[in-house]
Length: 292
Image 1 (tube, rainbow, N blue to C red):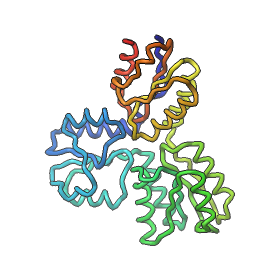
Image 2 (cartoon, helix red, strand yellow):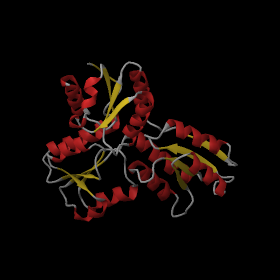
Image 3 (cartoon, helix red, strand yellow):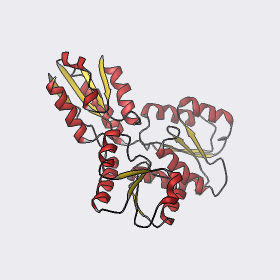
Image 4 (tube, one colour):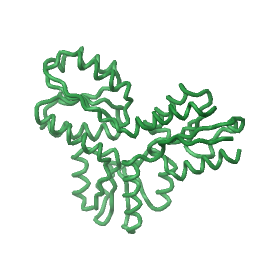
């Protein structure tokens, strides 16, 4: 069997930075080390960090923190009010928010203070979306109507039809792992809307696009594709959906143990992985394929 890795796969810069931050905190032997919510959307990586002492902290348990504890803010970021609440406990806060997400948070707040309405293209309840929304809402100083989330073209059409954006200054941002195709569709809807002005920032991370492009090239060379990553990972799900449209034999797995035995009959298999997939898991899957 010929095994080919996609030219771009696995950890992106933001996720690797967050994982490194957590590992560094664990090595310092702090009394307790937490992440506010799951650090990344990959159960294999989370289990490995958990075995070293990393705990997941729910937002409603912040008051249980003590001086000496360390809390890692994951790559998705958090609303500013939540970060302030963390710091008031006296614990050590390590802000591992992805630099690209930090830019979106700052941009959302700045535009709201300038009288713009922020429209964010993203997935409801995604951690990154919640954080950016928090920055926009705080900058509005208690006023409403300065932030709207749209998940797809249909949402943006309904938003325009409602009239709440009519003759307003609007800025469009996106979740870093959002679908480029869907973002463009939303952008076109707003460009045709009766707005006072519109500024568009495609804040989709290049890592997402690079993985999609690498997958497209990979599909030309193989009979089957293995997509590795957490089932809750937005960018990995999109890799899987794209792979299904490019190849007849596709498997979406979180670990090597889930690899279908049917792949043993294929003469060539490609490997791709989401931005929250550890190098070690990719290596294990490749080794398992080699043994089939």
